[in-house]
Image 1 (cartoon, rainbow, N blue to C red):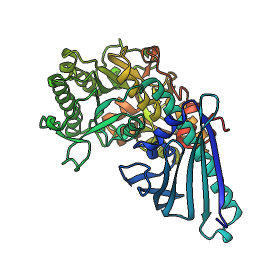
Image 2 (image 1 turned 135 degrees about the vertical axis):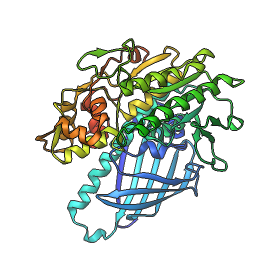
Image 3 (image 1 turned 90 degrees about the vertical axis):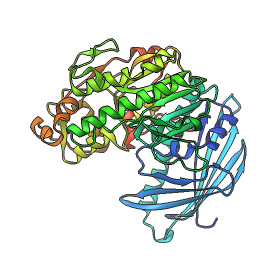
Image 4 (image 1 turned 30 degrees about the vertical axis):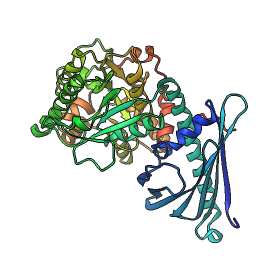
Length: 467
């Protein structure tokens, strides 16, 4: 088309053309391909995936400006190509073709071809055109790196399609886990606390009242339990602490009893826990054999893990994932630390407290790995193999973002801001070993901050071979 610009990005993947196409055709592919550092959200999409005539609606940001983007799928040749076009959005024209071909050496090649024309193209400064080109390169570098890593995990863990029941699907982890599972070919039913939508794979439950609609539940292979009151949101008042405890213990107990009572029991019950179970361990390395700590979060974790016992006694394998600090720009600790950097804060307290972190992509991969790996049963530390101090983490973030940090947040200020949580979580440290997870065959995408932070924050270039 006259006046359009052509952008092409091509990569080779270690899979068949059919596998590569099928990944894109499944629900969740669009969500998985959005780079973590892009403030873009899928607001609505058809359940039919990439069939011609299906639509998707996204909210994107160009700088601080939020815009609506409507996409329409124009064509689909299974195993060969599909094409979508912007029907409404920030461009005068945008058409995206996805082409799949055999690489001739046992792999497959994906070629993304985009024709676009910017609004007011003839009046657009060259610097803005160059900026857009660079943003496209960074975006597709990230997309193809995520795709290659996802395919590698699914080659190991998704050899057979499984049916999962997931709690907490609307939370920080759940929103990323569901698209990851469905693009791997798995079927997911979500527990919700409202009336399920017609035709959806949603199951009503009320964990505080002990209610779950077992009648709508199909035969499942596994349960992934992530639900629980947000520990890091709000001060720990007596009421907040009660909600934190009840949301974990009552929900876990209900699901464990339900799993144990099903005519055909699931093979696995993956239950979230947290490395907060160890309390403040200072610089000491801690493994799964370490006893529980003595603070509030340690007690929550102890009761949380104990609530899984009905499933254990029924002979169901029960990995208890003691999760570290999950890093994602969509929320949680990384978002809060990012805010601190804006004020020039380079460490919290003395900054010596250890942070056992893990990127969101490694976290969801570990959940699937635990669900299918027979070696994992009972407590499992889930964190990157190289914990770092708070000041090293914040310095690495500042380096990625080009921020200057000259201040420290004193303990008294953190206690005034967070109350009891300041000493139990913000100023406390935990340096966990992950020998059990790694020994079970799990491989990290981002074992170091040098690999993880650029992927999350959009700075630097990921190690992706461009054909």
